[in-house]
Image 1 (cartoon, rainbow, N blue to C red):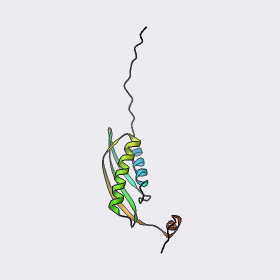
Image 2 (spheres, rainbow, N blue to C red; image 1 turned 60 degrees about the vertical axis):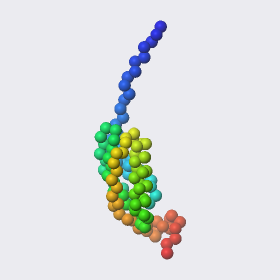
Image 3 (spheres, one colour; image 1 turned 90 degrees about the vertical axis):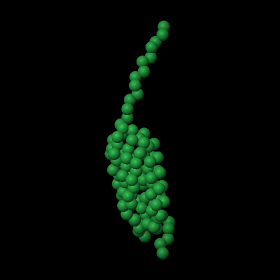
Image 4 (cartoon, one colour; image 1 turned 30 degrees about the vertical axis):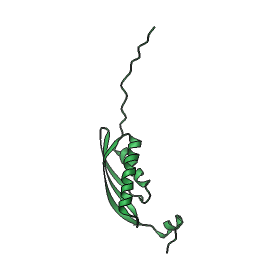
Length: 112
């Protein structure tokens, strides 16, 4: 006896705008030199997302290098974790943050 197998179409996973924003902000904070206070606005349409970020960077690190690393990392990680293709990412540097003496001491660096 032969049994027919009925294949149903695969389901669809939907990722909310808020979830994409949180994932992208977390990914940005994973980049060395980016400090707390990252804000993200996402536009999600189908299988793609466009992100706008405001990123504070630790002073005196090179802004362009940190922004490039942030762009590459956020696009990759957001895609990995959401399944979306990030088709655009605008990064604005929100602030240059100077480490306090206590933060520098905690990281093992000397303050002169």
